[in-house]
Image (cartoon, rainbow, N blue to C red; front, side, top):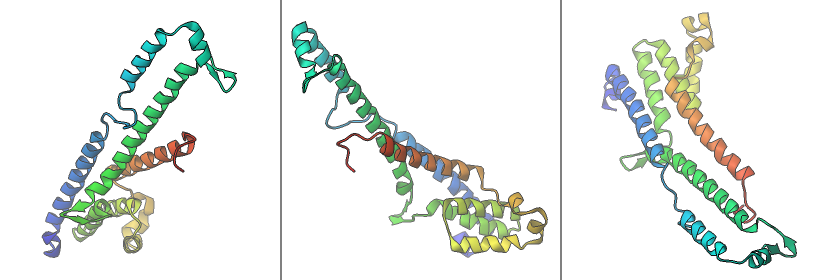
Length: 214
C-alpha cells in the first residue's frame, strides 16, 4: 500500500496483480480442502452399520420378516431396504450441503488480513488496479478492472468513476460494451459463487425432510 501513497503506480499494479492471483489460488485450495470425508455425527459408519443389519436380517425366518413389513396396518414388502435408501439419501444430501457451505466460508476466511476483517477485500484489489492503470494511461485495463469490481461489489463511488470514463472521447466513439468488460478470472469467480448459492438454495427448497429445521 505504500506504493499507492507514493504514487508509484507501476509497483501498485504489480503488487495487486500478484494479489489477485494469490487470492484466487488460496480460494481454490480452500475449496479443495472442503471435499473431504464427512462425519454425520449421528451415523458415523454407514457402510459398517448397513452390513451388520443385513447380517441380522439373513438370520431371520421368512415369517418374522413378513411381520416386520407391516407398519400401521399397511404392508411394505421393501420396508427394510427402503430405510437404507432414505439413510443413503440423507447422507449424500448432508455431505453435499456440508461441502458447499464449507466452500462458501472460504470467502469469509480469506477476508481476514492481519486480524482485520475486510468484507470486500477481493473486489478492492480491482478498485486499486483501475485507479493505477488509469494513472498509467491504460484506459482499457482500467475499465476492465473497474467493471470487475462492479460485478463483485456494489459501490456508488466506483459507479461514479464509470460515469467519468463514459465521457471520455475514445469510449464515446466505440461504445460502453467495447470497454467495460469484466476480467475473465473475476467472471469465473462470480459464476462459482452464484452456482454454490443456487445449489444450496435448491437443496433447501427441494430436498427437505419433514423433520428438517425450518
